[in-house]
Amino acid sequence: MSLNRPCAIVLAALAAFAGAATATPAGAQRADAEPAAKPAAAAADARTAAAPAAKADPGTYGFDPVHTRVMFALSHAGFSQAIGTVSGAAGTLRFDPADWRGAHLDVQVPLTRLDLGDGKWNKAALARNLLDGKRWPSARFVSERVEPAAGDPQRFEVCGTLSLHGVDGPLCLQVKFNQLKRHPLPPFHRTAGFSATATLSRAAFGIDAWKSVIGDEVELRIEAEAVRDKYVGDSPQGAAEAGAGEDDARQDSVRPDPAPPTPANAQPEPEPRR
Image 1: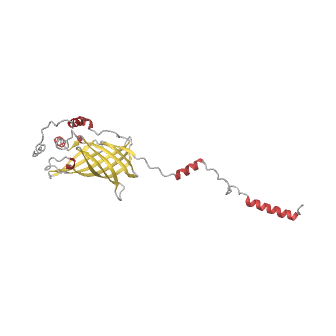
Image 2 (image 1 turned 135 degrees about the vertical axis):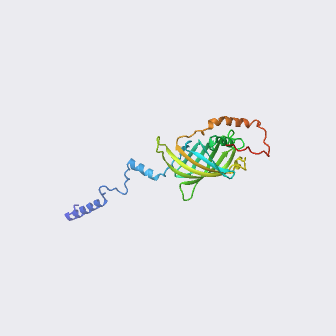
Image 3 (image 1 turned 180 degrees about the vertical axis):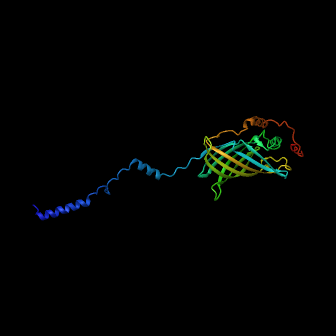
């Protein structure tokens, strides 16, 4: 049966309207259609943004033996503070400037390079009844924890074990981080600088001779520069000269001491004459 013309016109209009309502505009996407694939670069950016930030790998720094020095001071019979220095340190420092709590320090100082400003005094300090430099030619400090100071991101307390004169004892350093940057002189190595202070008792490490002349409290001041990926694994300067002393120490540990015993009431050796 054929439709009359008015009905045909109405039906055509309804069909056109329905088609327009269901058609997808240019550039638009149907809700039930599969999403368009993202370009590879955009997908990679999305993954990078979603992934947690990677923690920086701590750098390894070796101590510059020339620009790392330990200064010590202790009472000279109450008249003044005797001052000496030790240079030629060697060791490593691992740290991430963003997280100092994970830092680790292991450094050795060659006591055989001790300098009190006078050859006789140097010899007296390294003698058997004091530092005994032939048997114990170096001191070593190994950190165990690092605590940042409250309110000052440049200061830390570094606590660990000091091995000195054959005795292991606790020691805490108050450290100031000076800066970390490339050295201004060639070859422009990345360098970190530190200043530190500490106080120790020499008697606590078995160094107790000359009590009436030498004070027990030893003040330490340390200035240090550590260079990234340089000096790592080096030995303390002066260790080669002290090598024979270390061999002698090993032999002494298994044979009687040839020196006669010192009487309990013996007086200390006199101070070196000027």
